Amino acid sequence: MPKTTLLSVALLSLLVSGCSLLKPHYSDEQMHSYLFDKFDSDEDGFITKAEYMDFIDERFVKMDTNRDGTITKDDLYGSRFYTFLPELAEAVFRDSDTDMDGLITEDEMIKAEEVRFDKMDLNGDGQLSRDEFVINDMSEFNK
Image 1 (cartoon, rainbow, N blue to C red):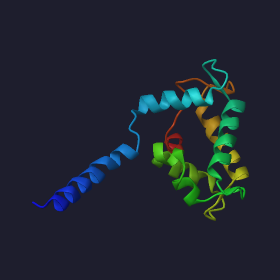
Image 2: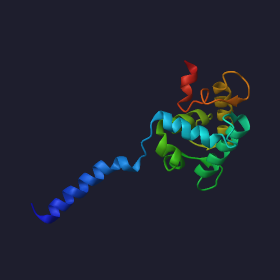
Image 3: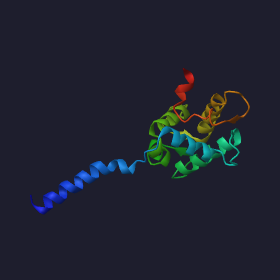
Image 4: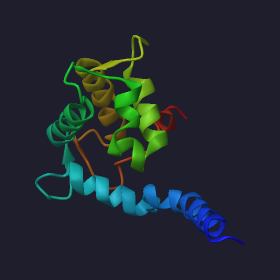
């Protein structure tokens, strides 16, 4: 087999098998722990509604790459959130886009995430324990 063909086959194999290297692989438990710690800014073992909403606001600003006050599907697809949790990112977009115009405003996201927080806060104490914190699709709450 000529060197160029062999090199092409090797490169193609690396690209195909290496695609999984581009998307991080973490267990659900690892991702849950990582995200809980990110939300829990004072590291007290609980996520208050203020901590939760501050993190959401920070994520909105990071995803709104052109600073127009909205998140588009393109913004979403280019985000780390989508890279790590594509199903959850899609669900958040769907649940936040309440007027179904294909854009999420900060107001839409805040309202949707306040509802999400309240649904996770099973005991109603205004904070989330590790057990209450859920990182999957909001439809889980509707069962």
